[in-house]
Length: 234
Length: 374
Ligand SMILES: Nc1ncnc2c1ncn2[C@@H]1O[C@H](COP(=O)(O)OP(=O)(O)O)[C@@H](O)[C@H]1O
Ligand SMILES: [Mg+2]
Image (cartoon, each protein chain N blue to C red):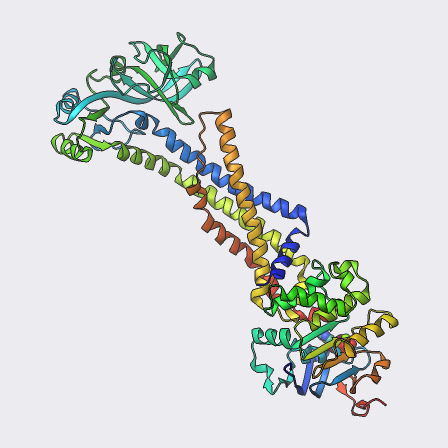
């Protein structure tokens, strides 16, 4: 069974700028993501969702507070160790897809496997397998420029799943997609391929329909979690 | 490093083929510049010792304190020459007079090595005669065929040295280089011009008896005849080439430094612009967990591909240029040899590493948070 991850953010804040221009993007947030949980983060634009996700994804150091992964303080880790942790334990899905333009769909997926040390025949095989499961076997050798938005995001999901991480972090993954395509992508991520035993999924979204599939919904406003909104959806 | 990381580097590089081609050409031209320059000098070194190399003797005598043919003036009095000829172990010894002087062909003056030789000598004269006689009489001269062809001269025409007219009675071959033109005149006439005895010599070419140990004979001669300096052929050649090399070393080094700087700039700018174009993607790779080593390797692959392809192209061009130049101007010898271009490989590696610094610096500054920007 895959290693699970337990992510804990305690009292974290992020302050941008100083003095007059100071912005408290995230303000004293406590958040624990348990293995296997699907958590939605919602809130108005500018409320700090992306900033919070960046800190959860070990991409941004909080101004105060601590982030721990499986009870290890991430502030004690160096850049190289953080990169390793992201590579092997966290799959990212972004609004802007962020595929590598000069690599085919399949190579984009292979790349992260290569980076994690999976080489030889195994990487191309697994990447094709993932793309097939996402309905992209016909598109595997296409460059991102030749794919539709929904297809690009499915490639990005395949990339996020490539190293079989115990945690997926997605920042408005359907933000650039029409609602039907968005729905399909979300389903693959949360219910289909992405949904495996013990994997935690955190999604920043505006899509209220997703409340059905989430274990928890968090409401962020002005950098603070609104306790009243932390409800299990009906 | 995985195959895909290398592939990524390669694609980034080839994204703009024209830029790739230009930078490869830039490196190739820098390499060509280095190889042709050092090839010209190596060729001159070879030409400069044509006379020494082509004489079938193992030992050379010159005035004590002199160790060169170039830029030297050597005098051995007649009795010293006779002493050498009579020395046990010496089979044959031939004295020649030598001076550098201009050979005047109408208004042109060709800087030349002029050798004064006796007639009927076993060696010391032209080693490859193509026409006429190899023993110049009192007002005669043997010159290289390349020179006569160039200036439209033929046997029987006249040239002059220091104003003395000399009739061309022999044409030699292989004695004409970019800074080296070997001509032969009568030794008695030369002695008059130089105001020395016709039996004196500048250099004595010595053929030892069969079976004699040459190093040993040289040592014995050096001890017995202190007013002369005896060198083996190898020593004489080495000392003359060393002199030429020193004359060219500074300019050569300067050219090399310039060429290396061009190399750094060409590789550096190309990889830097290729990196800038993909800077967001480097941020993406960082965010999803690429190590610094993996990111750096994409830069190094690009730099080394340009350097390698450019270097190889430059070496091939250098061989082509050297072959072409010999066809067009036989007096210019451009020596391109593996030991010579291989010696630049370590420096090229250094140059490539230096050129990678700026792109590496750019990559290390990329903020992975670009992934969240639309
Ligand atoms: N790099 C930054 N520098 C300064 N302010 C920033 C930076 N990133 C975000 N902010 C500010 O922090 C607040 C939260 O931004 P963000 O986390 O992107 O919100 P959301 O994702 O909910 O739209 C906003 O007011 C935004 O302007
Ligand atoms: Mg956002």
